[in-house]
View 1 (cartoon, rainbow, N blue to C red):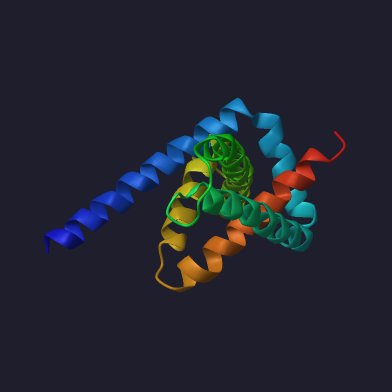
View 2 (view 1 turned 180 degrees about the vertical axis):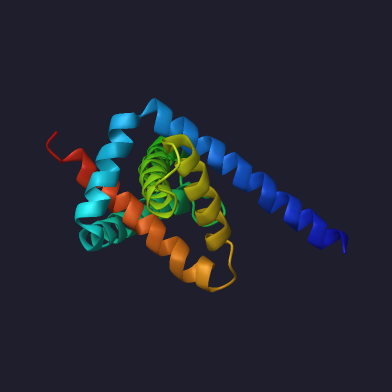
Length: 165
């Protein structure tokens, strides 16, 4: 019984944290999130495809670099490990930044579609809470919705970088 309560508390706290995170991202990077949202509205299929290709490309690069860093897997020199550590972290940080902007745009769009009568901040909170709860759904949320949203967010962010103002 305590495991269920603990898990419920963790999900509730993560939902609140993600809502606050997306509010901050939306407030600090208004133009970037707006461009991501625009590219998400105009080309959702292209955003998904581009995001999936880039995720697997950069993910493979990061995985290879992390495998080279691992001392148990091979006999790589310590200096090479230190040198390869920074590009590996850089690639993972780049993917995280793309995902953050993409999810902020998706949450903003989701909130504006579900609750158009509310102000933008409330829309963003509603969108982030609903997306967090939907992605926590076993199997469908974990293996279908979460990858779809992540790939689409990454692709929409990349398309937003090349969008004309």
